[in-house]
Image 1 (tube, rainbow, N blue to C red):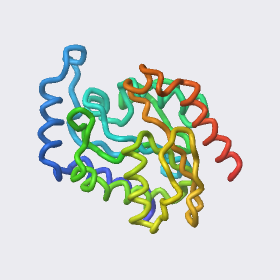
Image 2: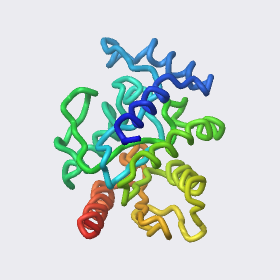
Image 3: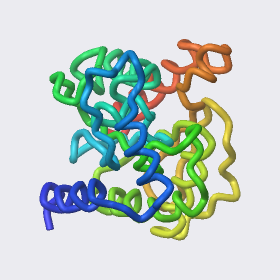
Image 4: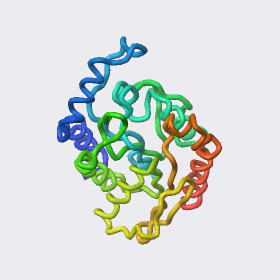
Length: 232
């Protein structure tokens, strides 16, 4: 089966997912109550599929949709501060056609890049439970199977790092003993023909405290660009 019908089937499966009762209740409650600054918006309030270029060589894996970001707009990393950092970096390194994305249908196109997450619903306090991550694992595995051109994988934050490696182990029996979480490092995944890039998550908790600076952040994307330009 070609990637387009495969991804269309997966998107519908994700959007209709109700595997995690806590998340089903929370995402609906957030969408119903809203917050004052977004009271005139109609919230998405459902699980979120990944998005981007189906022929992408770069796969970016985040944690989960933000309660008033993706859970509101209907697209990951859209309408919140983490999304602002991500889309600007993608634009500056040639992976996006515009530097800002605030709405689902705002003309954003990803170039040679696909964005997803290890959890598809906004979790309370941005902390999905282990059981919820296990339920969502099947979707990331399917994306790896569908996106056949991936050469570079960027994980954002420790949870994304751990659960992306778990998915790769399930799929390919990846030996992760030599792979450790540290911002700015990259690992060639032995036998897979892919390179893993590791970053802190661009959450406000990290960017406003200086744990993750813009220079640290953009350096990761420039490293990815250099790598992909080299592998062709």
